[in-house]
Amino acid sequence: MNKSPFAGSALDNCLAFLAGGDEIVLLEDGVVAATLDIIDRCEAPIYAIEADVKARGLSARLRSTVKLIGYDEFVNLCTMHNSIRSWS
Image 1 (cartoon, rainbow, N blue to C red):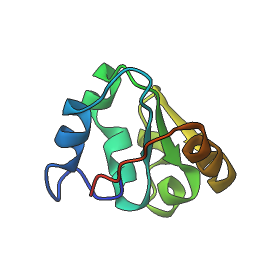
Image 2: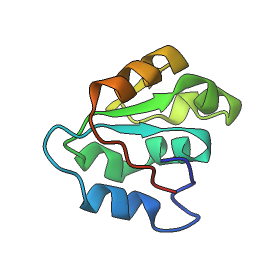
Image 3: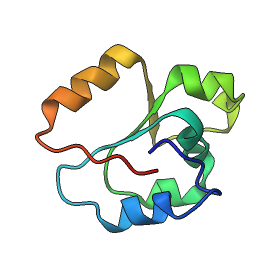
């Protein structure tokens, strides 16, 4: 997800369509979602691009359920899944 959760319904839509085995990557302004309580109730693993989190000054506000990753790990996650959806 690459848009702020305050800029539309991307986060709600993403969470509503989660299925077993899905994982969520937050990037660009989407990393703002990593600071919200709703993230703690998500059963899927949630990752956030560390560079985007740092660029927005959100490091101290991240939920404990969010794992920071770099771009190499992002690419690895993408190659592990048959289908990728972009929520924006």
